[in-house]
Image (cartoon, rainbow, N blue to C red):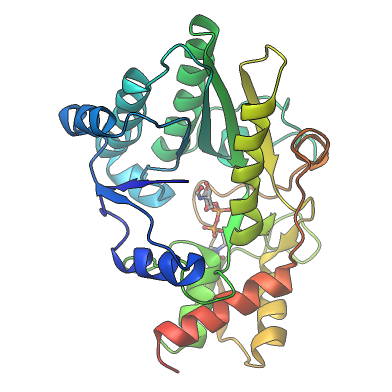
Length: 315
Ligand code: WQD
């Protein structure tokens, strides 16, 4: 059984209707800003049987974080610290899943990226809040033996739930590739700008590891079950969540055109500051320890993203 806490700063209540339609039951929801310690304390007083946390609540736009660094440090770190200070251990082990990101690796020296790859200086305040968040959790898990942490380093989540009840709802002009592609195909933008085609890759465009959001969600349940059932003392573990396959921007565009049956209007433009050339995950550890791997393809994800866009654009 779960409850949802969200401040709705980057989401909306209609998501709860979508979840109810999928699960055929209502999930208790509490509109709380985790930066408000009093409200969070009241929540834990009224909900005394919380046995674990999956912590997603953070601002996540790389570009926005460069423009508003203090807002990002305040929101992402104060929320995490408040939560950790108020967790109801009650003398038991407490499982905590942290939503992290492959940005902690920067441009990795070797590919696919393993979990023991060196952490590089963050390219953005957003990426730094993920690095600092992991450091806070590592230090706390050393001093608090009841705290059991799994940090999930997402590669590039894309797509929507196949029911089209829930999916990505970017506010304003999307920064990420796939929502920009689907909005362009829906006529909301004239064309997609491909940020650079002069990279040292097979077709000159950047390579990423795109992962269907449904596969990503399942990894969280696997992570929680792993912590609830695990015996060994290691209180802090990280897992890369990727497909293990890298696809270039052009491959994503061509795959989208195939699944949508629509040619995409795009142009090559200059590189985007802070972009790395290539990143894709080693899937070995998540597969071996969590028993998780992706089951859905890039086509599945892009097809769900396009159907979701059509539903939202009423086309
Ligand atoms: C993917 C590729 C762009 C838009 C970021 C965060 C990461 C995670 C996912 C939160 C890049 C190119 C993009 C466009 C383009 N977020 N692109 N035209 O930068 O790999 O990762 O989002 O957890 O933490 O860093 O994802 O989708 O922005 O870009 O050519 O209009 O698409 O240059 O090569 P990114 P992205």
